[in-house]
Length: 81
Image (cartoon, helix red, strand yellow):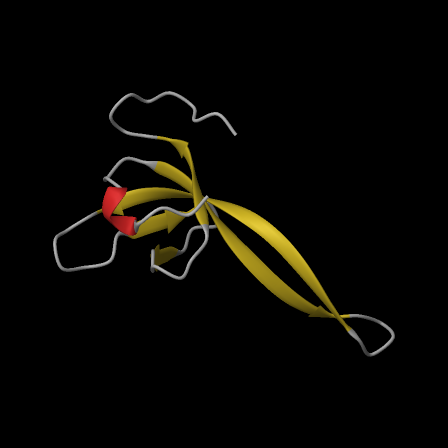
């Protein structure tokens, strides 16, 4: 599920889909899909929401990124998959 980034609020927990390309031993390529957990830190008008990834990095959540909710700040309950 990817909704508009306008619905995110600081405190939301989401997962962002990342596609990683890896070289294989037979000189080919392999695509690995990973969902990385992220904590939305800031949502300010006129700027992309800022999230802290589980691996310690920070990223802006852009409209082209595929993401899904884990929990929302307004009710702090898990979102059914």
